[in-house]
Image (tube, rainbow, N blue to C red; front, side, top):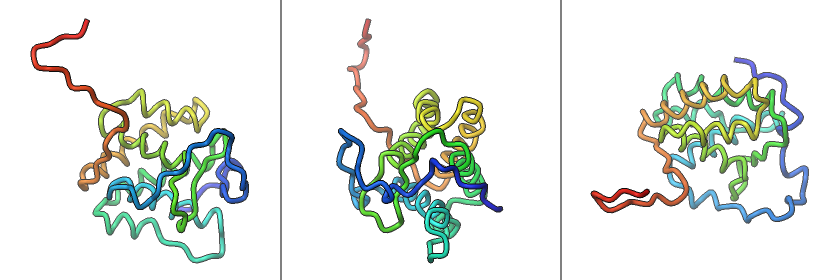
Length: 174
């Protein structure tokens, strides 16, 4: 399927060498578990030909095959990225395939998938609303749900970030 025109907001962050004020240091890609590494690698391989055309890039469909994520996951991911790539309302931080750090929007994609796998729709919507105009959010949410479900079906489950507080049995918080 041909990819839509690239939004001017989906650019190579290396073209802007100054990080935003107060930016946190990037998490190392080597610190990611298999599910998170799959998401980041797939993101980067999808975006790479758009950012640096004419160079050799990994094919994201091969990554799906290696991870055991079927065609529905490929189609859902392509739909999600096509929406983000064509309708982003701000610069989206996607790194090159060789970058050793994880970008803030790559972290946001990890939060999106983890939230949807945990049935946390509000957290998923928060990520999408930061990237997209309101009228693009429903279609992106549907595609993201399908991608998250295909990953889970292949055994790639992301853990939600943040602390989970377990209360003792029989106790109620008022």
